[in-house]
Amino acid sequence: MIFKHLYCLVYVWYNEIMVKQSRKEQMHTYTVFFEPIKGGYNIFFPAIPEICTFGKNLKEAREMAKDALRCFLESAAKEKASLPRDVVPLRERIAVSV
Picture 1 (cartoon, helix red, strand yellow):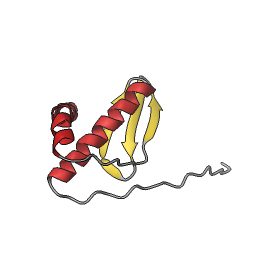
Picture 2 (tube, helix red, strand yellow):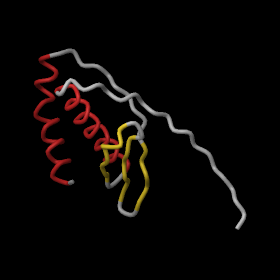
Picture 3 (cartoon, helix red, strand yellow):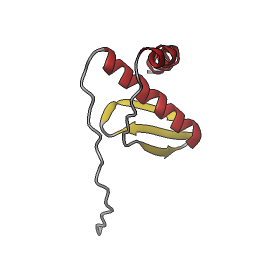
């Protein structure tokens, strides 16, 4: 998993220059969750369950989320795959007696 994510980061860094030169950029927005855990944050996108990453702090977690999303979207564009629609999950608190 680490090597796959590292490959994505290298791929994104390498292709940023090429992408900017070859086509007009489009902005894509997706809902992301930052789950606090010991040592940092787990990151996941409800609309794209294939993406999961981690950051040691919230600032790093945001950057990691952007990199992972960019990698996924560039790969989808290269394969001419359709992009998933964003999902806005419903959030509630539920109380039960035990």
